[in-house]
Length: 237
Image 1 (spheres, rainbow, N blue to C red):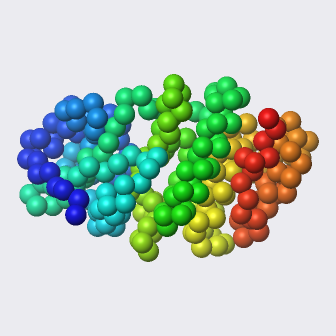
Image 2: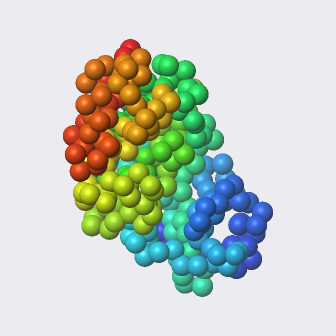
């Protein structure tokens, strides 16, 4: 089982007040005392709240699985016997990158490598729906890529906790399954070249993509009709 680290109320407050790196709607990412890890702590107005049980189960499973190309959970964090977050691996060489500003070779590498990682996740039964550059860490020096926000995956029958807009549109007409990977990756790929699924005329796509890409992009306008293909394979070299 995943180890657990006990902290006090003072330690919790100091972490989210003075060691905060970023925060979202439900949790705060904080520095730890080493450069090799960080904390994700759940709170509301600086008051600790229980980490959702669904997330605890997924983090525990990921700890056992040791999934490559992803941020690794190290231990859960508890306060007064309530799990309020977890500690995860960190690498100072990795950072979030806006794909639109990568040079052509870096962009192609990033898109092909993330496709490969998503296919690997599929082989493990992991559904990673929120495929966005903000959730993908990239070391431009050595090419290392890691997916973060791993507690929001679907795994072992436990669904995603928060559905981003693209996943919501997909789930309105078909179940969230492994084909969400090419669907969301295609959206990321189109945005990397300045397009989206609603404004991607054939003549403009031809600047960066081979002819077959248009068929896939057109199928995405109604997710129920999506043909489940990755368009990264049709990028012009």
